Length: 182
Image (cartoon, rainbow, N blue to C red; front, side, top):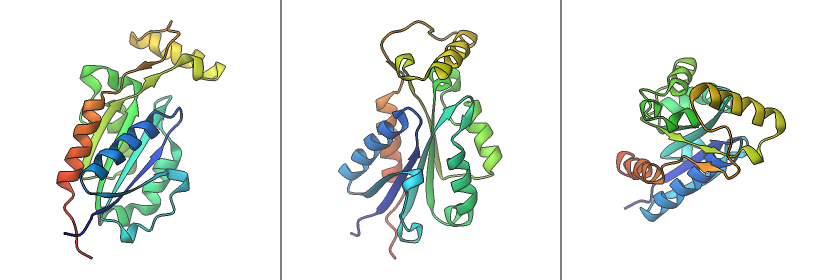
């Protein structure tokens, strides 16, 4: 059986999307997939030689990284002709009623903006780390957290990411993206 070639490309601000992408790549490799892992802005892969492409993006101030939107718009025709997955990493996904692609406002806004429908989608809660943020971001994120009922005074990082959910998504991708002969 031919080994499937996949790429995971990601846009991260504080590193949590990268950690999630690394975990998915490891899980997919354990299931016999050949996986290229790359930051979105450094992706040099030839999509014509891939069986599947997974795109991950983080949120800052309610917007997915601009590079992600540009990449999808630039490559939309190619993406529509292959197996694709998309995952969003954001703090609002820490809330049970906003942690699915159908209920997460940032995912819904992103899909509408790009007019792109990947085969698989998921939403993961990110990491809150006030000490790592520049002053302005720390101030703004604390304000947003106050308005949304989140923690505003924490010295240690809070990782909201559900790693079992990340593993389950990788397992879904391994099963949903059949090996394609080229």
